[in-house]
Length: 221
Image 1: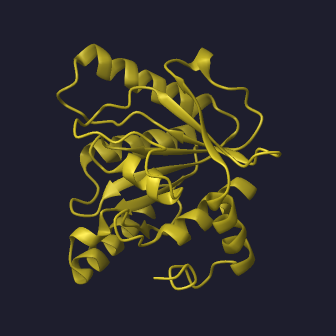
Image 2 (image 1 turned 135 degrees about the vertical axis):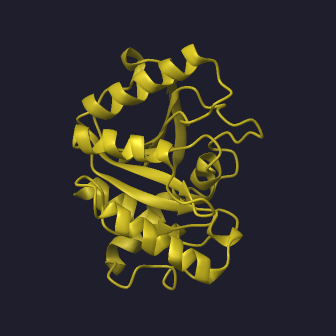
C-alpha cells in the first residue's frame, strides 16, 4: 500500500509528504528517564506513546520510524520501565517521541507498578511541551477498563490524546470496522480525545502514513 492510499481523505498532502520525509530522516535515541528530574529540557514538542504492556507499542514505534531496533521489543510484557526519548530531526531538532512505560501489567511487583503509575501521571500532568498522547489499543480486544482509567486521567489532566488501534491485521476487516466504530463512539464521550481513531498494523504497514501525518499535525498545532 502506498503512502497516498494509506492517508485519511481529509489529510493535507503537503503535510503528509513532510511527515514522510521527517520519519525517513534522522531519528536517534536520546535517553531513558527513570524519574522526572532526568527528563530532557523542554525545548521542542513531544508526542507520547501510551498503552498496555502487550499492545505492541515498541513494534509500532519501530515500524513508524522505519527502524527495526529503535524501540526495544520483548517477549516479556512490561520491559519498558522508563520514559524513553527519541529525537526526530537533526539541525534542527523538530520534535521528540516519548515511549512511556506500559500499564496494566499484573505480574509486575506492586511497588514497581505504583512507581510507573506516578511517573506516568506526573509526566502527563506537568509536561508543558507535550502536544499529544497516542493511546494504543489492541484492535482484537478494544478498550478495556484499565484503558478507561488512563483515558479519564488524561481527560482530568486536560492532555490532548488520540486513540490508535494496533494489530489491525490480526482480525477480519468487518470486525476491525466494528471495533473502530465502537472505539470512536467511546472517544466522543471523552473531552480530551481526538474524535477519529487510526487503525494500524506494524507488520503490514497499515495506517502508518496516516499516523505519521497525525503526529506532525499535533506537533504543529
